[in-house]
Image (cartoon, rainbow, N blue to C red):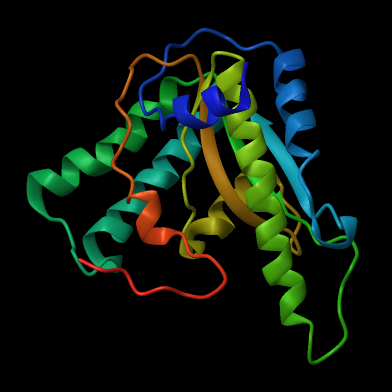
Length: 206
């Protein structure tokens, strides 16, 4: 598949078929992920492919709790009533997916001295985001769907306990993985001219 076809064709999928995915294909996705660049080749990532049905059900329940608080209290445009209920229920409906991916930040090396130590974490975030994008594009090329899910930190300890994730390892993101049961259209993007500059920041003219 052409790289531009993958970039333009990938979508966030929220409805999946329950068809199983071979472990060999999941390893292929992880292999694509770890080809991403990382600061100082630090490779600060670990990938957990959750295939156990009961664990996936528990993850989805936690995600419902997290996003009920996120959409109902955390955001400035707080949702409520039936709108909030419908928004949150989409996470529960993901319980039928064959695989749930949990991406972890595990800083193994390239740690910095004070007062530069905060940059270790910042650069690790950049590196893992690149790996996540690689994995999602590879999934699309394999006919699979994904959906990048943020994991607000106030519930991460529940997930870490459920999956035996070590104390010093943080959860970075999650995504269902499965064969899509929907074909969503592309969401709007800002015109490239509005976000592109050459040499210096240019003021956009109306």
